[in-house]
Amino acid sequence: MSAQAINSDLRRKKPFRFQSDWGWAYLLIAPTIIGLIILNLYPFVETIILSTQKSQGLGAAKFVGLQNYEKLFADKQIWQSTWNTLYYMILTVPVGVFLALVLAVLLNSKIRGRDVYRGIYFMPMVVAPAAVAMVWKWIFNAEVGILNQFLGLFGVATINWLSDPNTAIISCAMIGIWSAVGYDLVLILAGLQSISTSYYEASEIDGASAVQRFFHITVPLISPTLFFVVIMRVMTSIKQFDTVYLLIKSTNPAYKKTITLMVMFYREAFEKFNKGYASAIVMWSFVIIMVITAIQFWSEKKLVHYE
Image 1 (tube, rainbow, N blue to C red):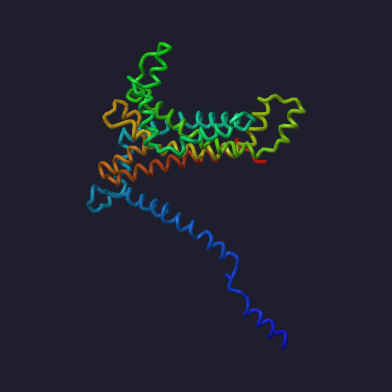
Image 2 (cartoon, rainbow, N blue to C red):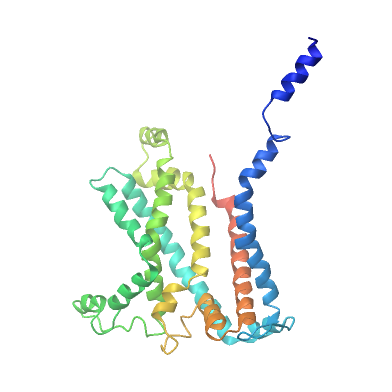
């Protein structure tokens, strides 16, 4: 048998394969790509289209151009809700990330029962938001709430935590910090455990104190993790809905000073059935997130250090 015939026979016996490895790559990522298109890209495009229409109730949508956006920027409550959302972000992100960092450093040290503490801090993440809101509603109760009773022991007057326009958004921010600190803690803890002990051993030989090691070794080496945590926390805070919606009703005196953009979107879309205007609110929230994220990535070059 000739060599050409042998090679031809071997080629016929080879198993089926794609023309290149790129075929397998596209096949493996296809479920994720399809999911992104169906669950993210398509709804996003539909939201843009709906924001240019007037859709009231179950009737047919009518194209109105940029009227929803004109109404949006002329609405004083939108600007108040935008400030409420940004104020909530300012209250929750710095404090929440700082607490998560401190707790992660403590739990990364050799202390008794640290695995138990890790579970306790992460527990709020697995509790339903409605249950969290109801528990904190009783804690913040002006008459029988445990927080006012505790402060009363020190002579502090009764505080209307959820009905005072000056404290309602702060109360919601406290719940947001308490709920999210466990998740941020786990992420930061993973970053801490990836730092080689050789850095700390060398710094101890050079006589560096614990504070110096923290600011000159720990913080720079986990700055990529902190950057990711801050980005995720900012986006989550701008999309705040459940806590404010469950605790602050429309009859609450603090309603206007507390309602966020996502709560306003829900009320416009599912209570007033004004889906076109609600979609415009979503697009405005998207622009805010994009601007803040762009600023964060711009600052990454100066604040984030990679090994």
